[in-house]
Image (cartoon, rainbow, N blue to C red; front, side, top):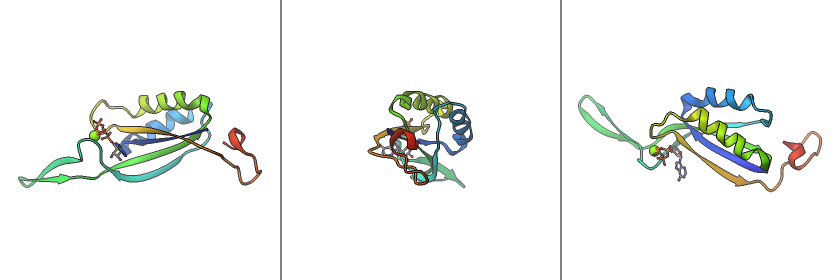
Length: 113
Ligand SMILES: Nc1ncnc2c1ncn2[C@@H]1O[C@H](COP(=O)(O)OP(=O)(O)OP(=O)(O)O)[C@@H](O)[C@H]1O
Ligand SMILES: [Mg+2]
């Protein structure tokens, strides 16, 4: 099992969720509002002629735990539905998951997803 952690633009969340829910391998999701910084270290904005740096920007973190064989499908869906082509589109990180347990039934591993 793998955990897919995608950081995307908040305005792209509805598109990403809709695309994920259409796939057969979607089982569940965790959504967290975060503040973040990428390679450009924020953006410079102007207000009344004064320039100032906004170093943390709002992003949404999407976490899914999926079967190993579904990682590529899910990752490609996220890329397709979250991309605008501009800087700040986000990033995807993939982690190994040691175990999953469905509390209600005691099922483990892929059966618990
Ligand atoms: N190396 C990283 N470690 C942890 N979080 C990161 C990292 N890179 C990006 N993020 C998270 O992803 C968000 C979006 O990053 P962003 O898309 O701006 O990445 P980038 O590397 O600057 O790419 P781009 O040049 O396309 O903007 C950041 O606000 C931050 O929350
Ligand atoms: Mg960036």
